[in-house]
Image (tube, rainbow, N blue to C red; front, side, top):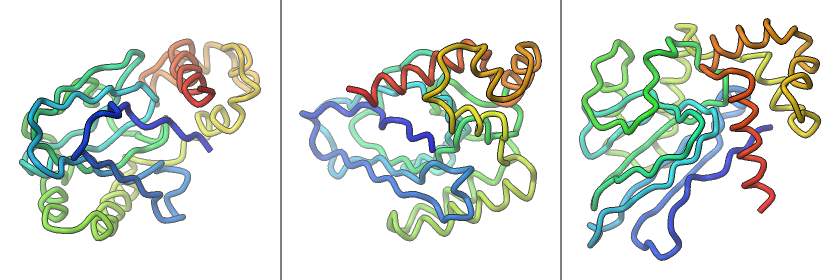
Length: 214
């Protein structure tokens, strides 16, 4: 299955830890990983994360300020995010096309303001705040289950076919053939479920493939 590369952390940065765990098997077609990025001590300089586009949607929780949370996804270019000298983030990374909420509510910029939406993100962040990363999995899994029940997360058969056959796809026409859709149908479905045009979706997947080959 699709395995996007980890966002770039410069090798000379110490005292910043990143952990990633696979979700329970029942979520294996929906969730790529549960993750945590945090400073172990206050850094002397601001830390910049090189965030790479991967077509995934993340739910992000700021554990330093549990009022800050959001649904986020990069589009077609990478961003350098200044996270400051101290930070602690926890998140859920969903496979492309799995998020079925309103695409217009998905931020493609740095999430740095209090969450004002209707999802139970603040309650979840508060539940996460006093536990180890291993213990956070239960809380994150509970949220995923609720999102499935609310039909905000679900298997996307179109993007799943594309990701499973990525090695055989060179063009948008290949993508349409594999999904057994016309180019117009594919355009409509991908735009609705991922926010991407077929061309941009393929561009991001190819970028990820190029990183994997290095």
